[in-house]
Length: 160
View 1 (cartoon, one colour):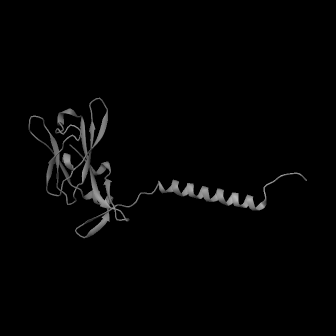
View 2 (cartoon, helix red, strand yellow):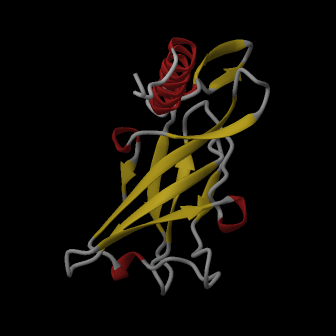
View 3 (cartoon, one colour):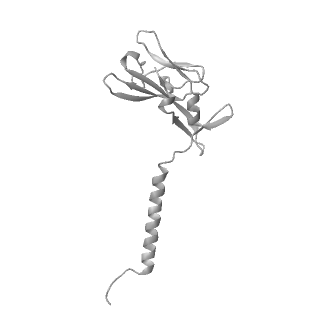
């Protein structure tokens, strides 16, 4: 009769605590699968930002200057907050650079910009790359009232 065991009350409390901890872990894990919806309003029409990505109209251009700099014209009706510039080299490597407003990435409809390197401040040279893709980033609002950037899929981008 000298056997020691856990009382039924302690074991019940331990089981409930384990279930609660597992439920919290699973809940936090599932939250990583769901993104908060980013909405954008243009002309009193509010849609999810990803729906506006198909309405972004970018037209690339290459300047005939000595450096052959390049940029884009916003020919759509959606303002572009910034862009991701996907640069592919002839060696097969590629990199993505985020071009903000200071480097020419922010363009309202009807305007054009020439893109600058955010690190050096110099204009990008068209001849330095094998392939150049410009992918728009839009600015929208979350349900909590915050402002958030939304990167459009590569299919919404353009090749220079």
